[in-house]
Length: 86
Image 1 (tube, rainbow, N blue to C red):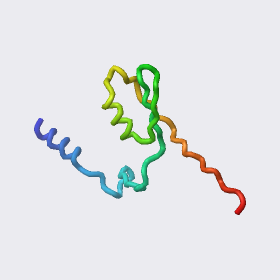
Image 2 (cartoon, helix red, strand yellow; image 1 turned 120 degrees about the vertical axis):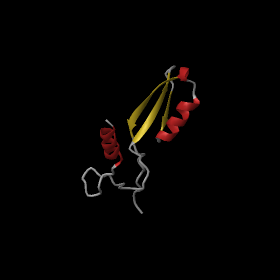
Image 3 (spheres, rainbow, N blue to C red; image 1 turned 30 degrees about the horizontal axis):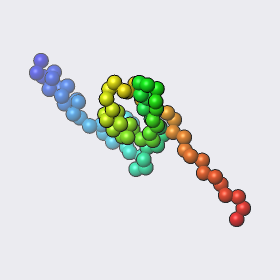
């Protein structure tokens, strides 16, 4: 039994070789802005955040009795008005 556990532990700790297609590489240092997050209170009030860290912070600041859930929303970039003319 110890031999099997040792083999499992070895497999778990082995890293994926960089040539393996399952190997993940970070593709950008830019902030991840694909989602917004709506914190929904038990009374129906909502607050929208543009990053998950702020949602987590607020979630843990509120008492559990006041919270309902978090909705993940598609991030909508604000459209800048294009200047016309010169």
